[in-house]
Length: 157
Image (cartoon, rainbow, N blue to C red; front, side, top):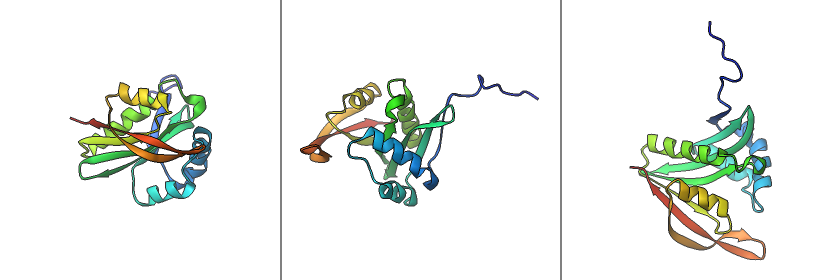
């Protein structure tokens, strides 16, 4: 028998998100965003069958992603790494997983929206091959009003 040591096991892993993960997801969501999704939005996504994953590092949840798939396209609805885990490549790893899963499920292109003020996320998406294809005026709530969304897309060829 060949026992795997802790050093042999992957330090990060992904698993399907479940409704009993929502307390954990909401904790990260509230830390990461001034205008977080509600628990009901996450619950509705899971009940609708949207693919969603928990990203774990050494057994601790450090992020999550939710996408929708239809007609050969995927839309990243929410992709988040906990603030204390950012800057270490975890978001890139999660994004790559989402793109791989979308491709495996027949998506030919993937869309997302991002706040112009979220420079780190924009840099991540550009670095992975996304391009800006438009803007949605006043899409996001913001302190003192609304903020546009940059619409980005990538072709999965």
